[in-house]
Amino acid sequence: MPDSAEVMRLYGVPFSQPVRAVMWLLLFKRQPFELILTNPGSKGDNGSRHPDFLKKNPAGTIPCIEEADGFTLAEGHAILCYLCNRHGWTDVYPDAPRERARVDWYLHYHHRNLRDASIGLVAPSIRKDLDIPELIRNNARATLGSALRTLDEGWLKDSRFLAGDAVTIADMAAYVEIGQLKPGFTNVWDFSDTPNVQRWLEDMTTVDSHDDVHVVLSALGDISQEAPAMDAIRDANKQALSVLKSRLAAF
Image (tube, rainbow, N blue to C red; front, top):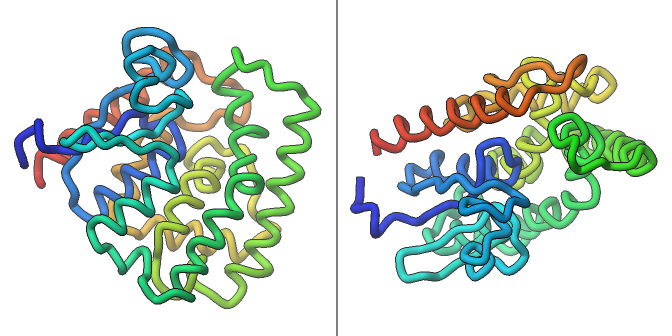
């Protein structure tokens, strides 16, 4: 593995959906990096609202990457596209204009549609301190249901993956949000009325590094009946970090 001073740093926690997407891409491409545990919303020394972190990302959000020369970049989808452009990973981010446009199409669609999975279902159970109003949670669940039907009847009706027959960063970005809801992970959504989405979820489990990236969800388990304790969340993140370090050591 390259010298730690030369390795890109990724700031975030494994439980974060967009952090997992970036981790997945990097592991999939065997690209060394160092995960710096950064607590979202915290002003503590390792928090995303600490003054030192805000110098890297003024928005105070995760994920954020920092390269050896000090270049920083935030926002998960921006990071995914940048890494593909920087390293020439055209297998997961095609360079043909129309093929790339289909990937970009989904990435733009994601935020006010599938991203609501966290707002409506996961965040209220994991982050009680956010105190998300019931109206917002209900609206988010309705938006998610509509978006899943759109994927089922449109994007995935005649296509194995979101942008064609091969997996792309669009699938990674989508799966970390949608897949977290399924049985075997948090178990907070019934996918039985979207069979194409169900099939796609199963196909995505065969993509290289899926299991390594989702250790945190496997460790946390079902939250459909009872919200997990903070200790359980911390332990799940620690397990995920341990597996990640073992995987990276083999690069």
